Image (tube, rainbow, N blue to C red):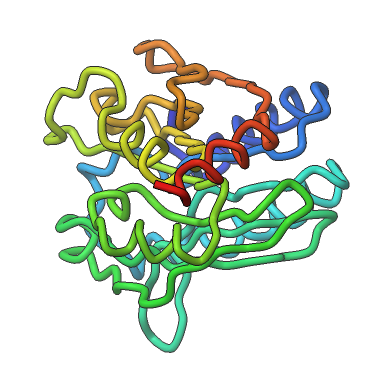
Length: 243
């Protein structure tokens, strides 16, 4: 998703994209990290201000959109939510207008910490009709111990909303996430905020046996749809467990 310069234009873009995706009748629709926060991560300086200006409206949008699309799971990218006086980069999972799960990013990047974003502490795996979903956010994948904890909790699908800073190194392909998918036997759904940088924020669907699809480098709204073969995944995982 291309990030716009106002909250309302971001909500409008997300609304249109979800509606378009829902026509394909998928099992799950996912949005990127900070999908309603205006402008790029380089402008990210005040977590309290961003939370105050974007959190409530974003969560209301997700709740209403989830009601409209009904039985489709909706991964709400992430939002800056206040909890106990702290501000967390929080990813949410919805269905039929109900909030099913909420995960606080355990590894905020330096820019987030400087802006006042706190670190979450609890990994999360949610049992769904699709399979077991492990919820991660962006730089969480740079934490091997966390990835292993989520995998050990039984995750079969990892959701990964991302937003790459302009300082992110140029990356060819998806070496880190492809390695995670292969080593742990999981599908990985990488969902990119493309205002900040395409170099590490390109959306992709990744299987243990390779890349199933990715969007282009163009900084524009895109919908990437792929079928996840859960039977093939479980056969792959059974072989892993015997190694």
